[in-house]
Image (cartoon, rainbow, N blue to C red; front, side, top):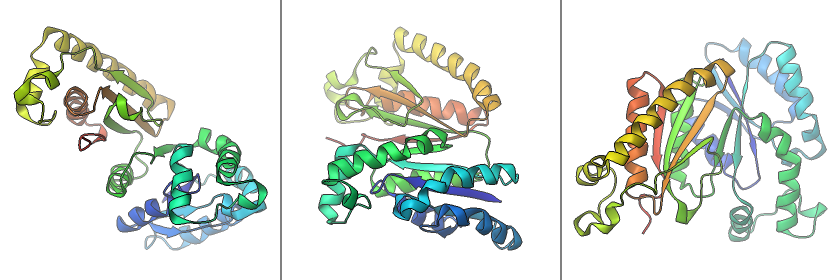
Length: 285
């Protein structure tokens, strides 16, 4: 049974994540107190094979009950009940703006003075959980469709896959993906932006791809990049890592980073790895 515990910052997109998981066949429960996780796990085991994929949300809305989360996780481990943690995050400014836009009340607002302090307090409370997470998704710059794509790539096949690799291209001008485990800066490569006929294309278009790949420095970079990735993947698998996010960045996230991230994704798929790709900033002006 695939049993996913979903948690994270208030306003980071847990509800949207649960909707996406429901769409791909997960049986989902929202706002489950930690002490009920193990008994609910037992009930789901009894319901097999009708229920084979389960996702439960537990978060700071549980108030004092949430403090028993680590005890609940330790109990699951001691009882040999496999599970994984999906943590949803976003930067403080984005979270504050989401609460202001929706006019929702933050769960910790009564214990603090304003949304800003509530977000910071919640982040501190959840820090140990974030460190134990198997999957981390930062939704700061993700659209609802992109979040669904990430959920699909992680869990649509099988949530128990040994290692899920997510390649993402981005533009440094829009900020780095905070969930990235490895970041490669390709701003050192020749830039198609300065070629008039390529400027309005992107790294998925063959003329841009051909331009980026034709240079000797690009070929040298690619050889070293793929050699490094091929060396590291078995090490991550042996370590038991569940998710690896590899980010490739250029200035605007349109040309070089897209071409290199797509090439890396194609290489991983050819190697039989469970991989996905997202070009985060390709639609930005």
